[in-house]
Amino acid sequence: MKNKIFVIILISTILINCGENKDSNSSTGSNNSAKEKLAQKFGLTLYELENGVGPIKEKITLGEISKSLADDGKKLFEEKCMQCHKMDERYTGPALRGVTERRTPEYIMNMILNPEEMTKRHPEAKKLLGIHANQMTFQNVTQDNARALLEYLRMESSH
Image (tube, rainbow, N blue to C red):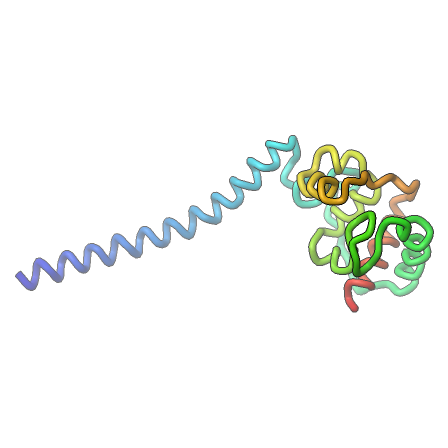
């Protein structure tokens, strides 16, 4: 009788452990699958879901923050963005301090360079439009300008 109980406990332990491994593997797979389904739902690729829709189609390699590029970005921000954005408070648009921690550099640059299509197609941009009820307008900036703005946002987020 003791042997039967021991065998039942041993088999139960093996089955439970096997089930746990299978569950942890399938949760990673289902996470990727969920992202793929979300991307398909909005007609996006996985890259676009993570990095936004626009002219930035490859990952950007960022180094240390460039003070001179950030200074250029600050001037552009004061000229083109301050009417709608503050660093630490919600205004017409969302507060931007820490945006570089919430979004990828590519997403931020695509939002700056292609705001209308972003709010039409990207689920996060659509959500922001719903919250703020204002369409971000294109500010006639170049890709170099957008990179300078990104550098300024990186510098501000590091404080």
